[in-house]
Image (cartoon, rainbow, N blue to C red; front, top):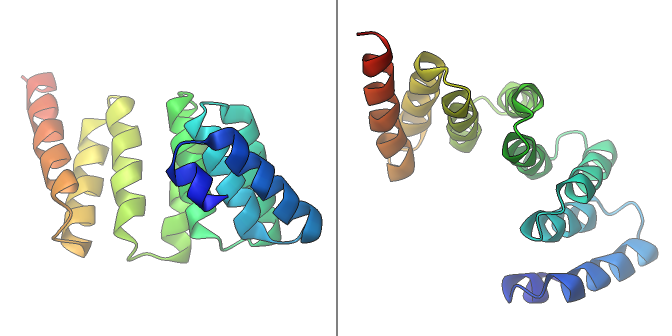
Length: 148
C-alpha cells in the first residue's frame, strides 16, 4: 500500500490497505495509512473515519491525531483541528510539529498572536524547522498589520 501511495496510485494503495485490515482489523497503522490515501484523494470524510479508527485502536497514535487535525483544518473545522493538536501536545509536549500545525490553524483563523506563540515554540523545539521560522515571520507581519 505504501509503495502505491508513494507513486500517487491511491486507489491501489487503498485496495492493499483494505486487504491488510481484513487480515488484521486491529492494526491501527493500516487505518492511518488508508486515511492518508483518502486524504491525498481529498476524500476527507473517509480519511477522518480511518483516523478515528486508528485512534480508537491506539489512543496515543500521534500521527493519526496530526493527520486528522490537518484534515479538519482543510475542512475549516478549526476547533476540532485545534483539539487534535492539543491532544498531541498533551501526550508529547516536545513534539514540534504539533505546535507548527496548531500555529497554521490559528493563522488560518486569523488568530495571529496565538500562531506566533506556536511557531516560536515549534522553532525552539526544532531549530532545523525553517518552515516554522518562515511562518513566524508571516504571522508577525499579519499581527503587526492588524494592530496598527
